[in-house]
Structures are given as structure tokens and as C-alpha cells.
Image (cartoon, rainbow, N blue to C red; front, top):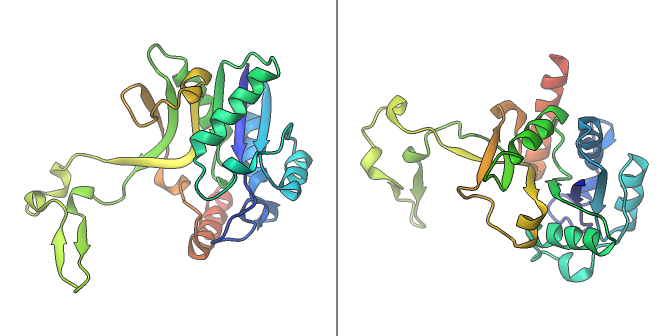
Length: 230
């Protein structure tokens, strides 16, 4: 059995009610649920939440909410891995033969069914425990600078100050959309960013963290541009 698990707690502080706030006319979480269903990859699409309103919205868009998340993994200190581990263990307690799980964030309106399918294809490869979405940094990280409390500027890696940009190694970061994994790997809390993982590479225009009001505004503009071009 393959299960999509969408973490969606109710206590978002920087953007209140972020998981169900309307984004281009739909609750934010609807995009993740619909992509999971459209992909055809999953036997179940489960939302893990501690919030009754989020649960009702999730069910309206086709997800299951078979349990309410315990309070000990619903605060600011609970990790995504805690939430996925709990959901996997719940499935096993219900005698559901879960082999693979996909953590799919509730605030990922740019996620595409086709990329979930790619992740499913990759995670089945030999010696692969996880497959997750990633993209390139838009600027060489070797040229990153820092500013001290008194305003002084310095480079994190001064040895690259005179190196041409085209000669620097490409760098990537987690796109924050989804993490396919073996159920056993999630249960063991095996590290995701390690040699047993592979990336589903996304174009930068398809990636946007949404943690602040400014992020939200930029994401809406970006979404408008992408959907206009279709």
C-alpha cells in the first residue's frame, strides 16, 4: 500500500490558518490533495491534523482524516518526521500493509501530479530509501556573504572570491513539496538528506516557500504567471 500523508496542524502563527487560507480561490491544502489524487499513485490520501476545520476542508476535497493528531506532535516543536512516523504507525496498527509513504506538504500549491509520479518511480530503485523535490540555488552559494552585528561584511567562503561563477559547482536545496520514502525508513527516522536519497529536480519557477506575508504575495503573483502561460 502507498499512502500520501499531508501534515496540516492548525497553529500556524506567521500566516494564521495558512493551510486553509484561500489561495487563488481555493484553500491552500486543496492543491496538495488534488495533486495526490490526480497522480494515481496512492491507495489513500491522509491528512494529519489537530484541527477540526482543517479536517472538514480536507475531506471536502477528497482526503481522508481517519484520526486527529495527538497534541504531543501538534506543537511548534514537533518535526515533520514525528508526524509521518505517527501516521505510518497508525496505518500499521489498523492492519493496513503500508510499504511506501509520501509526505506531501499542505502549503505546496505548485506541486504537480507528474512530479509525484517521478518520485514514485525513483524511490523504487535499488538502494533508494527516499526521493524528494529539489531545485537549484539561483546564485552560487560559494559567493554568499554575511554581515556582522556592527555592519562588517565578509564571505562565508573567501577562497572563492575570484573564482568565475561558471567554474563553481552547482548547488541544490530542498524544494519543500514532497518526500517519498519507504515506510520502514520513516519509522526508523532515517535521515532524508543522505546518500540513500535521490532528487526530483524542479525548475526554480515552480518552487516557493510560503512562510511570511511577503512569501504569500510573491507566490500568488508567480502562480498567476504560470497558470496564464498554460
